[in-house]
Image 1 (tube, rainbow, N blue to C red):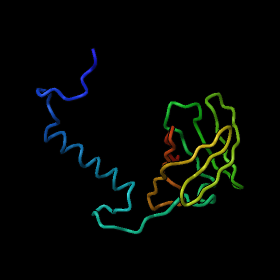
Image 2 (image 1 turned 60 degrees about the horizontal axis):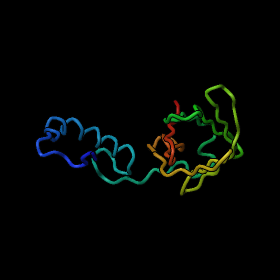
Image 3 (image 1 turned 90 degrees about the horizontal axis):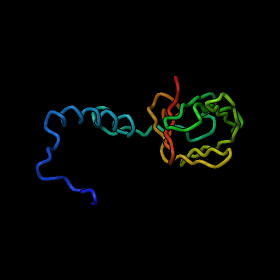
Length: 136
């Protein structure tokens, strides 16, 4: 028997209380990742991560069930990544206005970089298979 993909007419939809709790969280998330300020007024986009120097010294943690647990960007377009067993490997990176590209055993190209306006390094970077967030 195939599972039904449509909602049964008697299933409840989220109530007003659930929406009232969810909407402020969604608004805060969108404010953090779009060029709109807290009042909803447009502000200049905060470009970050558009050149290799924006990453030097930044350390990121992988937010995915992957083996890599830490990535640190070094000068000269080199990055280090540590695996769960503590073994450190090297790779190279390039940064352009369009994407961050990591090259080690394979090539990974970012699909989104989140900028908060307080740093030239992105706060988080999305790749097709993982999300990485900057450590503090």
